Image (cartoon, rainbow, N blue to C red; front, side, top):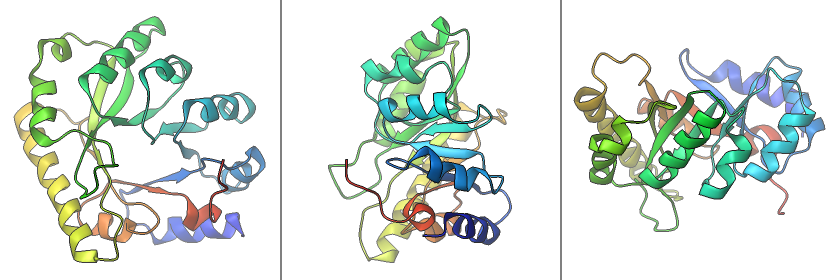
Amino acid sequence: MDIKTNIITFKQSLPEGVKLVAVSKTKTPDEIMEAYNTGHRVFGESKAQEVLPKHEALPKDIEWHMVGHLQTNKVKYIAPFIALIHSVDSLKILKVINKEGRKNDRVIPCLLQIHIADESSKFGMDYEECCRLLESEAFRDMEHVEIKGLMGMATFTDDHEKVRNEFRQLKKYFEEIKQQYFAGNDAFREVSMGMSDDYRLGIDEGSTMVRVGSAIFGGREQL
């Protein structure tokens, strides 16, 4: 697997304004450095216990994104350095992120994860739950998190029209939430949708970030 060629080719194919998050979970520091040496700096991990040693071992200008489900007891490990948490799926986890942000004297950028798939195994809030979070007094009092946008995962299916409709729905939610809660806030601008199998559909429907692993690094080793 030629990681260097893959990432250069992949980035050249992305339209302007779409950020590539190279999902490096289960990949070794050497493999990540192959991508890093092309000039790429944005990497995504799904487990706090995996990203922590990588952060310590690899160059400090890497922008680490947490793209997997985050447990409350793991937030403290990534709070000092994480560049963006894509997977905020409850007020409970956001409260913990805010608390750890305060401890580290930093504002932690986050995306709210919305459940758009036809699969109960995928995490995320529904639209109403997301609105309740944003309207809550607890959220209004938070000074150490910044909501940058939304994230969603489509159903794993060969039915492209279904995936497209789910992404379209997420973009619609983004526009409604932007208008209702973040009007005039330029920081709320990200729609993280699209992975190796469906990133083109995500881009077509307005994605600003794609989370791509296997198309760059090859299949993942099972841990």
